[in-house]
Image 1 (tube, rainbow, N blue to C red):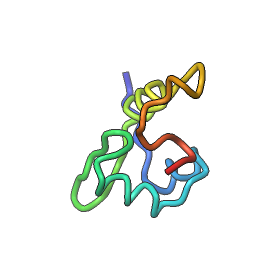
Image 2 (cartoon, rainbow, N blue to C red; image 1 turned 45 degrees about the horizontal axis):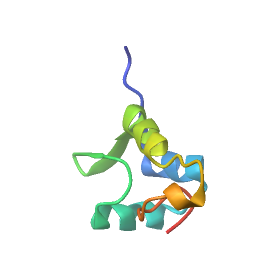
Image 3 (cartoon, one colour; image 1 turned 30 degrees about the vertical axis):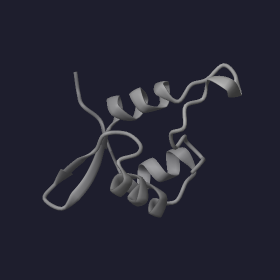
Image 4 (cartoon, rainbow, N blue to C red; image 1 turned 60 degrees about the horizontal axis):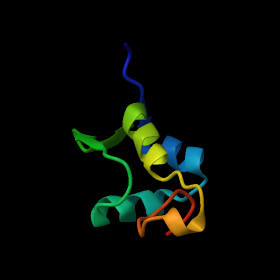
Length: 72
């Protein structure tokens, strides 16, 4: 199984958010797990999808107070 990686620009485009938001999330410990290799930040697709799955909700009452895709 091939492991697919996204860079910060690709993930920001996927979620239609700014790269600055991803940078802030990393410093605050929010968002998907990431790799930092030789000064480069990479996100594994499996971790992106796991984070997206964790953000799924069936009503506004079930949303936990965590940064969600497209939100703060």
